[in-house]
Length: 416
Image (tube, rainbow, N blue to C red; front, side):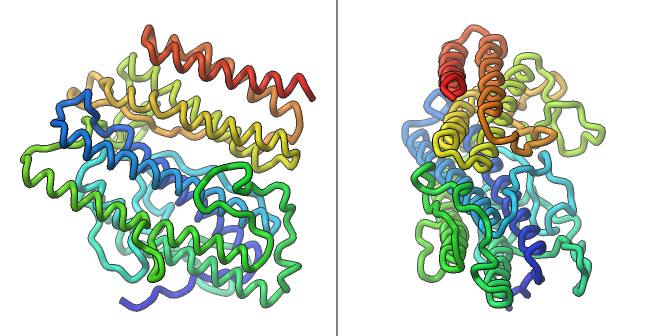
């Protein structure tokens, strides 16, 4: 297969546009991987000891990939800030409608099975590798082509077959624009807004201040994801291939083996006008837990956005720590959700987190007011957790965790 042509990026505005698309890809994939991991069975389910140990390893591997996708999202934010842009943390709700991404990039929420694993491998494949997509992901719009041609002033969506192709084009744009405009003129952003390894322990995270650090950041993203000739053994692509080999061994020795609970595909929290391929979560118990899980996700996202908008070191750390702690708080709620029935209309299917987006995730003005707003919202979630989760140990633990996060935010606001 010949190399795919570069995506056109002739101006800073074009490059900011491409980086926004990359941010959405990373954000979407992180959610898809977490969705699959949350529904994996554990020792509480109908598993042999061997199966439970194997699946626990898959869960750790998938979550580690999701964490690296979060690192990629942060790196893309740093790249955007470095050239004077604003980080992009919004994205479409799932399932992502056809045509939003290139026709070969299908982004939906599905439980972990062979087809979903094939899909993850397909999405993470290196540029130039020909692979079929998962059987549950038909490419109905294979002839659709994004693009408005060359010579336009307005940035436009363009096609790419692989994520590696997108990042190769971003890399080419950085080099071309640095040569055309000068490195100093290109990197005009405030480094204090960026997030480095001193603030977030994400693998490969670094600040971007010049051409060399920008190219290094892009290398980290590609090597961790698709891999490269020099470094590929622990790439996402290779890790998913390893899981698939183990999956096939288990299914061959145990016919009927299913590693995942029966989580509904593409769950949604509101009745959709077009219900095709979606599952409306309207069982009362599941709907309440889904509401809580999405609310925590929304607050986590607000804290993350605020962390990239703040230059004050103490507030910046506070917001980023809140986002990371919120991510860990989501996990037990989302896993619990996959044990609850989705809807009376879909017997046998369980619910799953939908990662519903807030209407707007633009940063609040920097300063104490943002801390007060986040603390208020965190307190509301702490008080709402027992109602949503009813009388369970999880409800008590989560209410305590969220309450402590609210206390921390309140204390920070009071000390300013």
